[in-house]
Image (cartoon, rainbow, N blue to C red; front, side):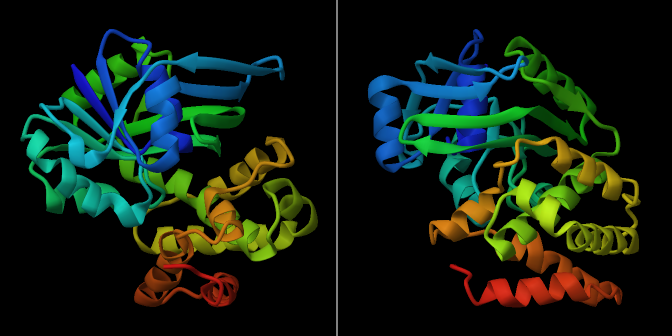
Length: 300
C-alpha cells in the first residue's frame, strides 16, 4: 500500500519513520528546512527507551512538499495542526478516492466529522498519545515511553490500519466507541495545554505547583463532555496520574507554540470548551479565565 503522512512534525515524523521500516511505500509531506534536511539526510528519532536511556536511530524517508504529491494513496494520516486540516486535505484530494482510508491525528474532538464533510473517503475517528517535537531540522525528539494510536468508526478499515501499525511495531488500539476514546485524550491535552501555556511552564511544574487548578480544568472539561453525552469523569484522576509519571520537563505543543510565537491551537484546545460550555449551559469559570488571558497572547 501507499501511505501518505501529511506533516512530519513531532507526531507525523515519528509515525512516518516507523512506518518506513515496513514493506509499505511511505511518503511524508513537510516544508522548509525540516523538509530539506529529511530529503538530504533522512529523519532522526531520539527517544527514551524502556530502561530510561536515550536511544537515537535514523531512517531514510521519501519526503516532499504537499503541492508535489503524485499518485494514489491507500491511507492518508493527517498529522498537521487543526487549523491546517482543511487546506491539507484539499491539497491531496486529487490523490485519494472513496476507498482511501483517512484520519486526522490533530488535537481536538471534531476532526473526523470535518473530514466527512470535506471528503467521500473512508474516515476513521482517531487520536494519538505521544509527547514529541521537532528538536531541530530533521530531528524528532520523543519524550517518555508513551505512545498509542487509537482509532475506530469503521470495522474493516480499522483492521487494515491496525495491521499496518503492527507491522511497524507502533502500538495501536481499535476502539468501538471512538468518540469517547478521543475525548479521553482531549481532556488531558486540553487541560494541560491550557495550564502550561497560561503559566509558561512544563507539565511537571503545573502538576506540582498548580495541582488544584489543573484538577478544576479537568473537571470542567468532563462536565462539558457529559453535557454532550460523553462520560469521562474517571479521566480526571487518570489524567493527573499520567501527568505525575511523565518526565518533569515534558510540555505541550501549544505551550511550545506560545513560547516560540508560532500559530497555536488555542481555539481548539481551550476555546472549544468555552464555546461548547456556553452552548450546553455549563459553567467553566477557570477555563474561561485562562482562555481570556491566553487570547491576549494568541497568534492566529
